[in-house]
Amino acid sequence: MPVAANLRVFVRPQISYKSSSYDEAEDRLGLEADHWSITGWGTNLNDNRHANYLLRYVDYGSFNTTFFGPNRAFAYALPDRRMFGVEARYKF
Image (cartoon, rainbow, N blue to C red; front, side, top):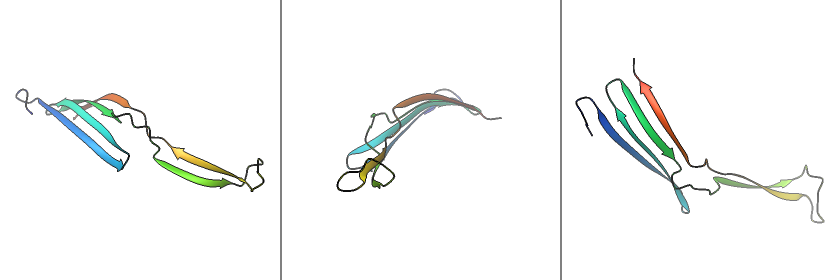
C-alpha cells in the first residue's frame, strides 16, 4: 500500500498448518522504498509448545536395566519460542 511517492507499507502474514493439534503463525510488517526497507517480524506468535517430533527407543547403553531388560527412552524436540525482531536492508 503506497504511503508516499516512493514509500510503501506491507503486511505479510503466514500460517503454517503442522498437525491437527496446532498451527504456527508468523507475521511481517514494514516500510519499503526503492533502495531500502525496514521490517518488523514475529515468529511462533501463538507461542506453540507442542513437540515437533517424538522418538521412542530402547537404551541398550544404559547400565540401569530392569527385570524386563534395558530401559526405554524418549527423545523429542520443541519448537523455537516466540521471537520478535527488526530487519533493515539497503540495495546498492
